[in-house]
Length: 425
Image 1 (cartoon, one colour):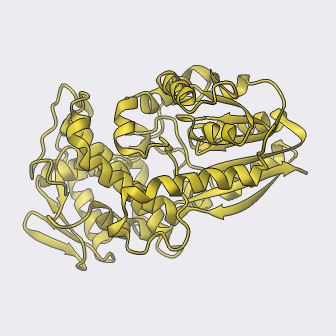
Image 2 (cartoon, rainbow, N blue to C red):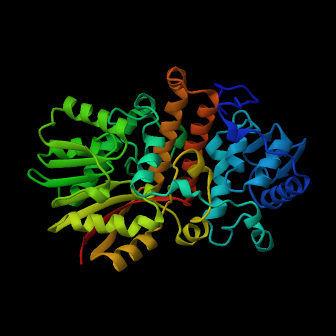
Image 3 (cartoon, one colour):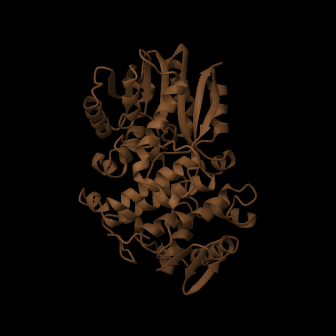
């Protein structure tokens, strides 16, 4: 728990209407409490609720408002736990790191034998408290632009406060054992690790002087700048308008405007032929319906001897299948319209819909956990500056939970981040 916020937080209802406590339902509340008891008995955590302690010790979660907490869980299994944190219904015990508390839950999901938090009979009732992704998050051209803008156009200044100077918003590549001494992860080590990641992608794609490069979902242009510094000609595309403006400014500041063109363009509308097509952690925003379109677009843009490198956050295939039609907290508050694929489904899609062969080059899951820890520490450290941009304490809790929740997923192995090489079969 950060000391930036009071022990019991209360969001402003007018600003956060989705966090208004749901109407109490005794049946749902009893069901949520029963689920907590079942989950806690097998986990190395402690949940203190109504002066009773559930669990087997370990990191402790303090429930401040048991009624709203149980009502949220009973109403929406996908978002209720995270919403309860945003609303201030619970906090980690003082001195307990939020990600450390969430890791045992993520480990339960990542373990083949204990992947489901609830027993099988209780899983059959999940449909009662599980919501589907809303139709307005469809990733057609208009919907994709709206979904992406809601995250990446939040505030360039906000992202600049916690990302490293390269403004690279994806897993860094530390090498060694990134999870060793995680508590001492330093902001100073982030830029070298991000540059190592960028270089690994460019090396795998064979980018050199004269290469024609397409960067799909270019972010704030760190990869495009790095490629241009090798002498490549780069087309960098994004559908986030504010992001594109800052990317252009950063390219000019780097002195490579003559080699990089930034376009506000959907990947489906790109034309031309390229020696290398690069796309870093963009597939997660594509949506399952459009995965074949995405990989077909990559293939159509490749020169006959060209190669593509895609860096993708992935999850176990069975979990992807189980959750692909549910509306999660991350989709509701962080990445609307998003869905994390599996390596298996990526290979299936590329085999069935393209002439591309997909090879896993490396895994950066532990590296992402360290990256996220550094981002979260920096976000908290810089919160006074971020708050002046017009964000409130509930927003702080939302991003702290998002970064800790993600870190826990990568630490547990429930999530991974892979660099994939795609070549013509």
